[in-house]
Image (tube, rainbow, N blue to C red; front, side):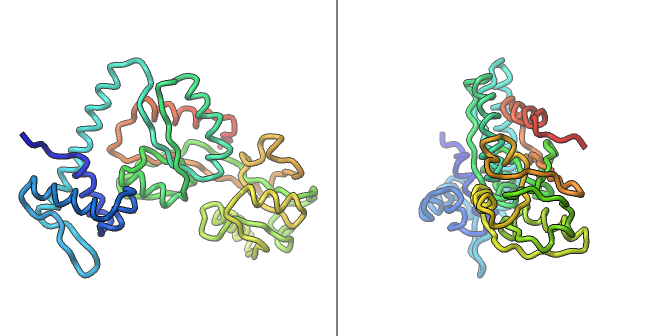
Length: 295
């Protein structure tokens, strides 16, 4: 007896969400013909057309829309079944796929993942880096179990929980007496690339004082920013976690801004996502982290 292939169902849902076979193929990391074949085999199994082409791509047929509604419930039922099995064991095991930004990946996650490995050797946590928007979408499409992102974040059917509040600090090659927006406005700023959540936060700090700054450099790497600042080419405003350890702040003066500037990191999960023991432990460690600043 043939049964519904859950992998093919997931591929069909992704094609419908993205509106094209090629976009789904890029996400899945397989060829477009492979995606088309999976959808075609699913159609053959159900003996009906699920996808139709339009001038702008593809969309689900009426039968496809009906399957999409059932697909949500099927996925939830599978997750519940897996969770029920896991609940029978006292061990924290399985896999958790986590998406986060590069700074948190470099400076926050390594000690946290080390703790998890020591306590729960059967738990595997995979990490992917990206910006807030991309990670939220990956969680929404169930390509990631969870995301750790800079808030605010949004997405259809997402549950967003604030877990860690972190200070942003001033760094330069020499100490600065005054650290207000007015005092820093005319100094050479080495900043993150425009469009990032971090850059938006920094720009907002100046804008609240009625000011606007134009950076002398815009870089995508926090480590590159730190190197440029240590060389005396300007100052920057970065997350404290990036300079919290002595070897991370060599050649730099680190000071608090006035007024203080914070960012809020949050965990994003699908609303229908069952929180496994592994996910629960990751969230707990983030909430208890030493760099978490009280409100």
